[in-house]
Length: 225
Image (tube, rainbow, N blue to C red):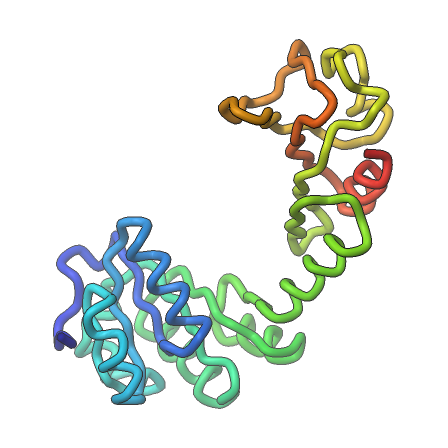
C-alpha cells in the first residue's frame, strides 16, 4: 500500500522520482540491495503498481519544491531522477532537488544536450542508459570481451579470457601490464571463487580475467585473447 511518509532514516536511503521502466528498475534493485526507497511519481497508475514493491510510494509533482519538502526529501542524501521523455519535468525536478538540498543527484538523460542541462542545474551524475547499453553491446559483438563497462574519463573495465601467451604463467612472468598497459584486477576459474590478482597469480587457459585500463588499451588487449 502506498505511504504518505518518508523512510525512517532518509539520510541513509534513496528517493527515486519517476517510476517508469528505468526509475522503477533502479528502485527495485535498491530495495533488493537492502536500501529503503521512497518512490515518487505523478501517475497514480504507476504509484499503485509499485505500492507493494517499494518501501514507500507517493503520488506527487516532483517539480514542486514545496511538495518535496513536505515529503521530507530534503533529508535525503541521494536521489535518482528517472524521468526521461518529459525534458521540462526532468530538468525542473533536478533543480527542485538541488534547491531543497539533496547533495547527490543521479539523473537519466536521453541526449548529450539533455545531460549538459541536467548537470548545469544540479545533477552530480548523469546516466545515458540507452547510449551506454548500445555502446556496451557493440563492444561485445565486435570484440572478444565477455562484458564491458566504460566510464566517462576514457577508462574501462572488461571481462575477457586469458591470452594464449599468458597461460600457465604468473602475471609477473607474462608482464601483461608492461606489454599491454592494462591491469589484471582479478581472476575467475570455473568452479572456484573469484580471486584478486597479484603478481604471483598464475593464470590458466580458459580463466576469466577482469581487466582495467584506458579504453583503447583494454580493447586492444581483448583482441589478443
